[in-house]
Length: 297
Image 1 (cartoon, rainbow, N blue to C red):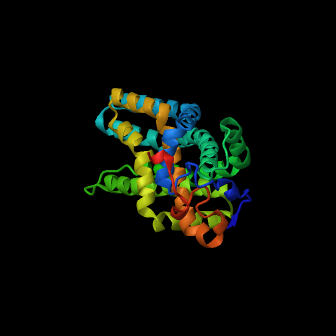
Image 2 (image 1 turned 60 degrees about the horizontal axis):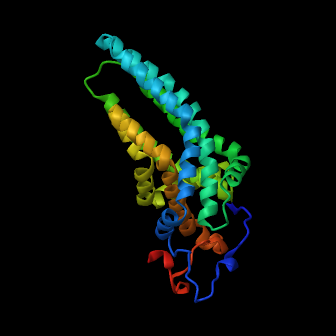
Image 3 (image 1 turned 90 degrees about the vertical axis):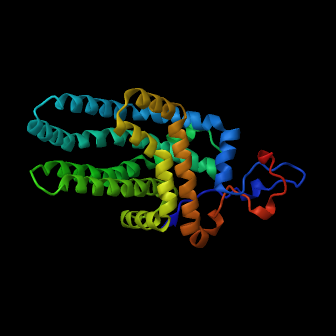
């Protein structure tokens, strides 16, 4: 794994002792500081991700309407039709998610620059991130989430009578695998943005990082994608629409910030500390350097 060249601006972060320091000393403090001083960045990220999510929202809406219509059939026919439809429709969801992933790439690039205090001009950096990383990002999304689409298709082909609740068991396994693949996917995307690595190293490192920092990765998933999925599965329309509006307004941006902060911490601990010490905690102060943190007042 090689570090992509980035300008080291650490010297610019030094301030005279009589000036209130605005840089935090940890990633949680940077999260709070972003909400206090740069809330517009989160709003912009949410809105632009919502634009890229339009095909995904449409695909999910159509899926829900069709499944609702299929439930009017007789029991045996209904189960067969629903499973067949959900199997192949997973690939439609994948295509819509590929479009969404392009926006995710741009926003994660912006968030990484924000975290490392490299200066952000939102639209310029958003499109620069897409230009530099879109091809690899789409490849990563196709690899990880395309695998899930294939598994989903196979799972929904298995329709036969049995005394063993095989479908429920396989569905639980599929959900667990999906969560793991999602966590690997977000780490792989940011790895591609920050580092230069081969595909084999990317897959191996994302797998190892997820299990080395599993509690953090689970926390990231719970704070970002879990609320929307839970509400969508419940399917109560008023709550679903309300949560969707929250994601459009601030949720997508908040999710991107949380993912980027947690991934930067993981990279610092597992990669930068030993391999790239000049990038370790870049954008943060050490506790000993901070004399006055005005943002905590």
